[in-house]
Length: 125
Image (cartoon, rainbow, N blue to C red; front, side):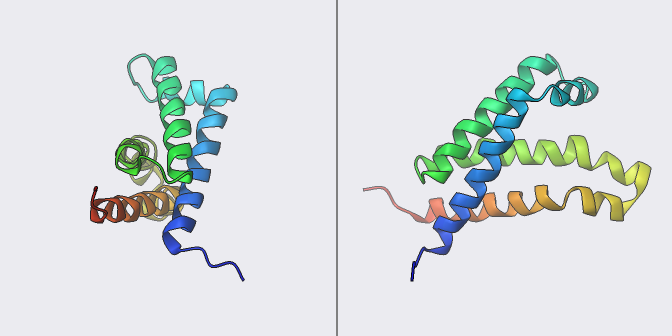
């Protein structure tokens, strides 16, 4: 029987989410429209940077490398995604629609917080 620690599973799952998310943002034209509608400055550049950060940090987390550097940018991206794309739903569709639309973002955010807490407990030699 394979015995993999919970932290490793969280790293693999979280890394997978961000690797796939970053790749899709790089190859799908739909995200350009989404980013343009958010009112962000330089939406195409912002989309590219977010995709590269998600891809790179996702790979680092999946490989359990440089966690202290990889987790914080993804926490910022998740908070931004929740506030920019999910929170406005409360005003138009209600709290239940927000809860449904933000469910995966909130779960990934919590997993990132768990990883951040774990990396802070590890002391460097």
